[in-house]
Structures are given as structure tokens and as C-alpha cells.
Amino acid sequence: MKKILMIMIGAVILIGVTAATTVFITQSTNTTTGETQNVSNEDQSTANENSTATDENSSTSNQPISQEEAEGIALAAVPGTIIQTELDEENNSLYYEVIIKTDTDIKEVLVNVQTGDVTNVTVDFDSLTDAQETEILQSLVQISKEEAEEIALAEVNGSIVYSKLDEDDGRPVYEITIQTSTNMQEVTIDGVTGDVLEIDIDD
Image (tube, rainbow, N blue to C red; front, side):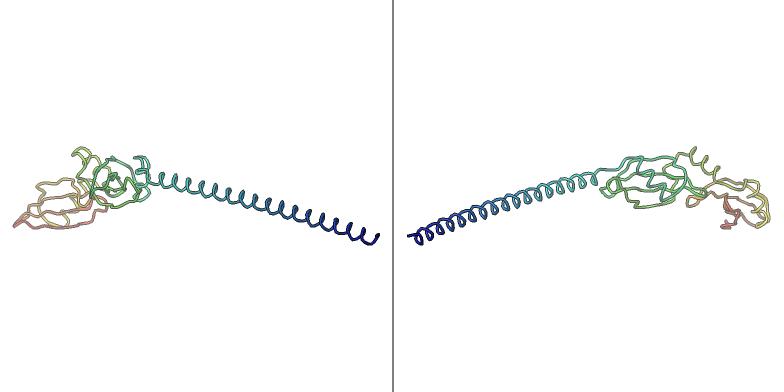
């Protein structure tokens, strides 16, 4: 009888242990599943934040640059003094045209409004008024008109008929017309260096 009782007690204990183990495993599985779900939700939240940040950066990068930013970009490409800045359209794109006076000439810098890229740098006087052109040329020259005339007469013997300050590819030049014994000649002198650039004989 005692033996049967001991067997029954052992069976009850075994059943209890098995049930407790099952409950523990179930709870652990539920906890792990919950943690996995939380991690998944956190990953999704992070992905959404990254997507939002990317959209914001994309939106910011599509913003047109301001005139002040364009002028800073232009001066980085061509150091000098800004004379004027205008907004213009070329090939269906908007550009800032920034006119800059350097130590030796005048340059026009085109800056793309959308990208901020410098697309072209050219020598330009066309966008200036006559008064602006004269003022800038006079500020660029390193030799006087009298000195330029002396240089021209040293090259061509004769008498000066006419001389003026002009520009050639954005650089200041003196154009000096001289009457010789046989013809008229025009001597072009670099207004910065004093070099003789050209002698044109008028037949």
C-alpha cells in the first residue's frame, strides 16, 4: 500500500513540474515575442525618421540659392570687386550674372540659381553703361595716356592725330592714331603693361 502511495505522490509531483515548466516556457516565448515586436517597431520608427530626414534634405537641396550666396560663389571663382548682379535666363535655366572687376580686367560669372554651379566665366563690358566702362577702365590702367603716346611714337615715327582709352577682351588699351609721311597707323598699347599689342596700317 505504501508503495502504491509513493508512486501516486511521485506522479503528482512529476505532473506539477511538467506543468510549471510548460508555463515558464510559454511565458518566456511570449516575452521574447514581445521584445522582438518592440525591436521591430523601433526599427520601423528609425526607418521612418531616416526617410523623413532624407526627404527634408532633398527638399533643402532643391531650394534656389540667394543673390548673396551667388555673389560669394562668383568671388570664390574670380576674386575682385562686384560691380553688379542680375538675374537672367539662358537655355531654360535661371542664372545670376555677376560682373566682377579684377586687377586687370572685367569678368562676367554665371552662377546657376538651382545648383550654385559656376557655368561660365567671360570677359564682359556689354552690360555696363558708358560711364561705368570709362570709370572702370581708368581704375585699371597702370600707365597714363601720355606715356602710351610716347611708347607709340617710339614705334611709329609721325604725329599723333587721335588717342583714346578703350577695352580689348576686358583689358584696358590705348588706341593711338599716328599720321606718318605716307599713311595713317593705329598703335594699340596695353594699358596695364605698356606693351605694344598691335600696329594697324591704314592704306
